[in-house]
Length: 439
Image (tube, rainbow, N blue to C red; front, side, top):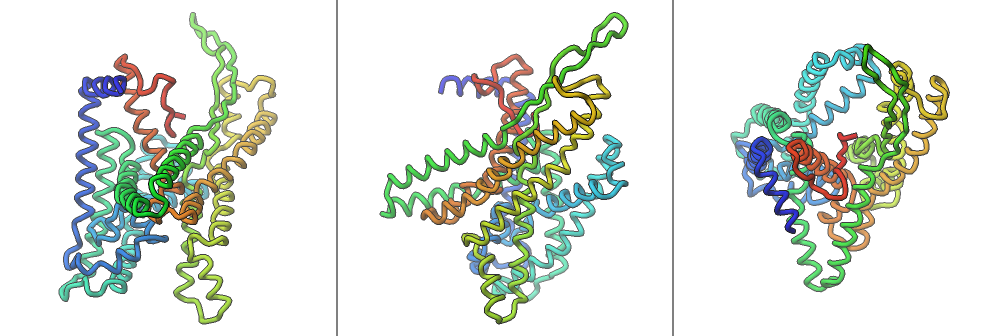
């Protein structure tokens, strides 16, 4: 405890770090205030049906990522997810279209062009999602609409709300601490954690298991968090030896460095892709006929706790992990860069042999990493089957837990970098914190 207090004092002594943390907290407070501002023409007392729809299931996930703004019919109800969707699409276009690949290689100017395209694509997605959100809201809670409700104005407000959140995230990245967009998503997730804990405490203390069951749940939750941290930080270091070069009177190279290949190089993207495909049965359910086979098929995939849903979900995560790792890590480019800089892997010939060696290492990493990622993703289902309530069960794995772990590690790593740069001790005595971006 004494060391923790001393670390807080060290953080407070650094004026730049102190101002960045306070700025970040202020921006996050503004975002949380926006989540409770209701769209004009909407009566909050008539949103009971929408809130019941978002209590669990896929709609519950959307509401969690928006920090509760989805169920509140807030001006930022669509959250930051349309921007994430646009970013994923642009990233995929960068793989398939040569002009996007050229922009990615242009450095800062190319990055600005890609960001601008991402913003335009976000607006296009928001137009469709805003209209779909209002249609769903009209069907679920017609009593919440006032007679003078203006649909085009509401869509414009929803678009402006998401763009405002994007601007807040960029300000956090520039003048605050951590990645702004990631922090906004994490704050939206954490906002539901206190309510989920209170409900779980109330249920257990009323007689369903008592304090012992509650203690077992908390211990199991900490174990799952530890496993998630291991998945985020796990790496395999490939040694690379660089030849000595004499330039003038100075010697370069001659040192051994490492290429850290991550066990889970794809991050949470496979889960996001898999969840996007699992939305398809929800859409098909609206057009399904009364045929018994069709109805049973769609109902099996509408239940997030069913066996078939989780089996297909896990297999999709494994497949997308292979796919996303293959498009983000290029052993051919890595071998070429090593050869150009006079580097080689000890015991492996440069060129084709190096490429084959890197492919072999990646194949050994991706299989256990993808299986472990799939297990983390379906842990909430196991938690729900064991009697843990729906809201708290969502924190036992999946995208929510991995995002929380990754963002916290990244933010703590940046804070530690500021401390070490000013010759203070880091946040941990046993070693430096490794976030996702530190590798």
